[in-house]
Structures are given as structure tokens and as C-alpha cells.
Length: 134
Image (cartoon, rainbow, N blue to C red):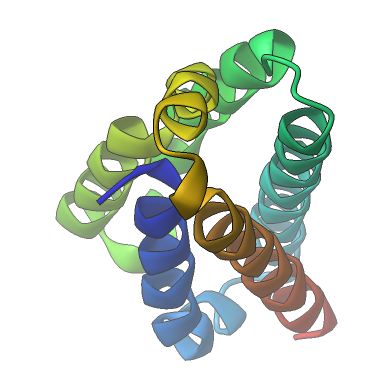
């Protein structure tokens, strides 16, 4: 599975944790929601760069920063083991620069991969909105 598919699977898994995430204290919910919004925005920027046939250099580094932040932000809500596993899953998918090369090598899969990327961003954005609203 390429990065967009992994990102979408992770977003769906996080969606499945929404009731748990909503149960967090308001300050924690706001921090989680803000991180998910940042990740979604980054994925939107990746998609835009890929549509313009540009390498998403900055977004790769940005996503890696969020990879490092995710476990600490959600650990107190989902537990250390689950937070670690989710962080590992995001680590497997952050290298969006590699996606540029993959799409050039496999142009027939371009649309499917970009749709998965957009879905991941949309799912995370919706989750962020729901968590923030509590």
C-alpha cells in the first residue's frame, strides 16, 4: 500500500477512536484537533503539489514533524501503546516525496492515489471539527 492508502487507513482508524478522543478534556481536544487540522492541511498541500507535478519537499518534512508530535498529543487519551502504534503507522506513510516518484513511474495509479490522499485529508479535517466541538 502506498502512502495515500496508508494515510487514509490511519485517518479511518483515528475516526474509529472519535468517541474516545471526544472524551478528553477541552484543552487536550483542542490540541488534538489542531494537530489533525495541520496534518489535513499538509495533505492538501501535498495533493496540490502533486497535481502541479512538483515534489512536495517542504510538506514531507512538515508531515515528519507531525509524526513525531502525534503520540505525545494523543497518549493521555488513547493510552501509550495505542499512541505508539498510531505514530508508527504515520511514520510508515509520511514520505510523500517518494509518492512523487511513484506516481511518475505508475501514472495509471495517479488518480486513485490522489483520491486516497484527498480522502485522508477530508477525514482528518472532519474528525478535527468533531473533536473540537466536543
